Length: 343
Ligand SMILES: [Zn+2]
Ligand SMILES: [Zn+2]
Image 1 (tube, protein in one colour):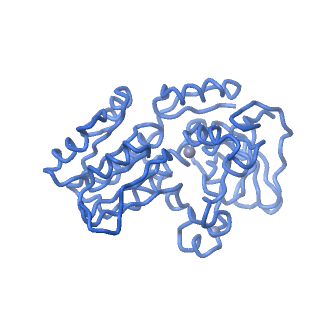
Image 2: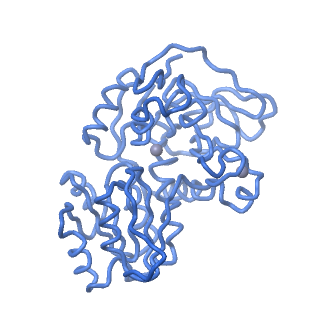
């Protein structure tokens, strides 16, 4: 079968490999579509720092169950499934407490839990092997376009669930970066709250997209954007800022626009540093958290919203063989919504 592999530092190649066999407790999934994420570009850009070459990329996979490993009873062949992003153990204290994205066993203090294309072989291939419990039924959702629900929607869902107490009617939410995650985050906030949503992106095309998806206000960022957001909120600030970019200017914008006791979620891996200190600083009481992936409960909520027609992934497809074009287009900022590789 074909697999898109991080074969050596900074190099992604399409390789021919054996079709893998599912072991005990695993299923083999015939991939219908695999989303391409900025995190994939980060892995490529890590160069020598990435520890394991030969890894098949792809952490946003969906398809149909093709073969059951020994002992698997929860699935049947031909069933459409989505491959969970976070391969938590399910049994450690963090998992039992419903914090699977902080699993102590498959992740740990210094690392996120393993997942497809991020430790285990990923979904940019004809087939992928998945632990049975991490293949979740898709029902009647088309598996070709469903893969991004497991990151582009799941990751915002976790960040948004962690700020739910601030999403009261009358609240203002700022979403920075209307790419794969941002366009889903916008839909989720709109689906679960009556908050006013302000979207910020460098790209007018993405702001148009945000307006189509229900954004109340959009801004291209400049030195005056934080002031404009303050003006929109009577000088008080936004209750929630979701930063899906995470570079220094966007983190600074979050700090400049957040309200007292507001909640900032830093999701994008842009390396920006939030200006926080233990001293009294304005605004008072801001809650800042990095956010990684999501829990199984978050993923079930995402699937429920998708089934209800409240959220949908906007995507463009590329044949698996044309993966390089998709990587190049994502890097050039040409993708509106998500790019999906179709085997
Ligand atoms: Zn991702
Ligand atoms: Zn665990």
